[in-house]
Image (cartoon, rainbow, N blue to C red; front, side, top):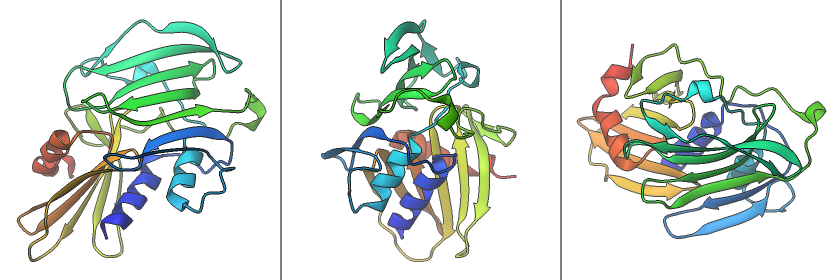
Amino acid sequence: MIRFFLFFGILILSFESYAAEQVYFKVAVDNSTYTAFMGGKAGLDNTTLNYLASKMRNQQFKLSDIDRAYYDIAQPVSMRFAGRDVLQYDLKPKNGDRFRHMLMVDSTNEIVHKDVYDPSGKLVYSFTILEPEDSSSKSVSTEGNLDKSGRCFLGFCVVGKRMLKDGTSHIMLSDGINKFSIFRKRVYGEVPASKKIVYGNYVMRRKLGDELFTVVGTIPYNAMQTMIENYSKLEE
């Protein structure tokens, strides 16, 4: 069941439509192993990896979405990268409750390169768009333009909710750059707690009372625990 939550959470966390354009994608498959491939042309029989690679395409970034109360943001550096004029941003969390993002963003706000690091400095995933810029081929994306009208806690706002058929509650949260999902389900009996890195995401499962929580995304385990303990503040 945790594998289902992980894959479903990854799909939702992308917040955009499927696209087949090519990217170079490197991801921490687990706590000790990386894999790298060309999205869409690798011939890999791995639905999760190919889907993740496709989701890297057409991500948008807006500096106005980032709350400076939680990030130190250096002056962006102008450069030429992969045939495009880009600005390089370094978004460093002020506390250890978020992942660091290093971005290269073109004139249309599209992210053409991204490196994401956990608080220990471990690279969890990286991608680079391979094809030259072609504005006519870009699809519409909601990345970087999320509706943050829901409840917020520690700078993370609810951007989506749904109820799964098995009664699992699923909420999606974002602070404009780091995102995660929380799955909550009533479960009786003992369920062992677990922490792991899977396909570039931290994943934590923990039971409180009769409620089993599974958190998937780009925040560290201590932040996931804080969100679980304050889950009531995220519900209406």
